[in-house]
Length: 208
Image 1 (tube, one colour):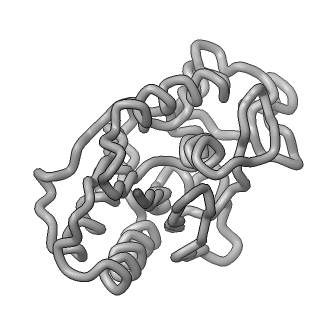
Image 2 (cartoon, rainbow, N blue to C red; image 1 turned 180 degrees about the vertical axis):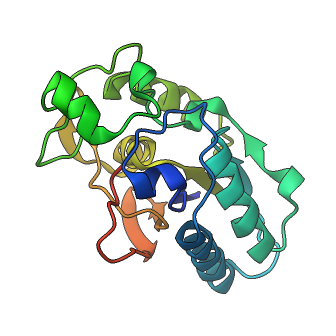
């Protein structure tokens, strides 16, 4: 069983350094679309046309937009994508849609600078161990003999990769290192390999 875990492409919120949350309409930028095509092309080169794997995506629009482009490269129908809200980004509650700098000016530091992860619970939002709990439930329900492509988000992918391949402890979970938007990793037998990484020079790549 192999896991291919993709982080969605850059969005208008990412480019503006705004918290996205899960409900806002956050379409991909031109860069994000290029990133999605790059991930799809890399997977197609590796797996061929119409690979036998299950495609899953977060229910957030930016993940579905990325998944649609990747699926097209694989010769797979968009309507084959399995949508699961447990793959959504860590919930940021009342911070959704706000500029990072405004949140920090109001609340003080909210992120660990070394790990780029929340040191406080967003008002009305989640902490990392809660994300881990919903991802663990999703993993437990998967067939044991099917390859999986999951299109998800920055922090969620770090928690998911931590569950599958380990990572440094943070907030009670194994948290993997960050990868830029438009990245895809393969995890097999607990070993993670970076397959594609498209980073826009000078752009924030860790925004949630």
